[in-house]
Length: 220
Image (cartoon, rainbow, N blue to C red):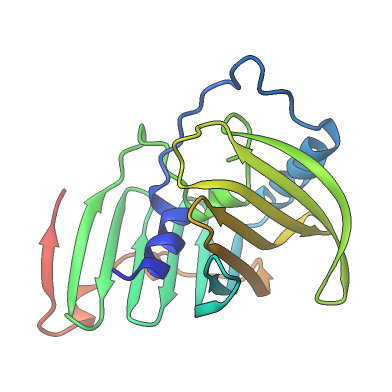
């Protein structure tokens, strides 16, 4: 998988969280920032379903754009589906299917509830509680809108990134910027968010009958 895909799905799926309390001497999180993040979490949890488009832009250490990727995400309870060019990820809450279009191959994994990996839902709820220190930087202009800028610092210093900026409007996260130690920067922006639509449960599971000749790699 290309690095851009790795980071995108790393944010969604494979950043294993430590859930450790902040070590002494690291400081405390900003109470105003926590109020904002809690409001985001509460609002998201009120939605029955969520559908949105996203854009991932990648800049190198010199600030030059080296690529971008558009996609979509659909969520319902613990279920989700992510689609980007060349790849679809399905999850029904207990099983995940990763389908590679170029090879017509699907890899199946059982979800480990104890793994504490980030899912799309966690990005909008309480992933921040025990894994980051966070502060409110004030209001900034983003795409012509006044948005709240929050800065998150990971407690686990072995992470490949050292800072995350969130841009929030009306208790919704619209843009996330991830700053890697290598100097690379990833900007993830949400658009066309729709909530409350009726979405069938089979949207979130892989039906091999719809993919003639698909090679199945079952790792459960």
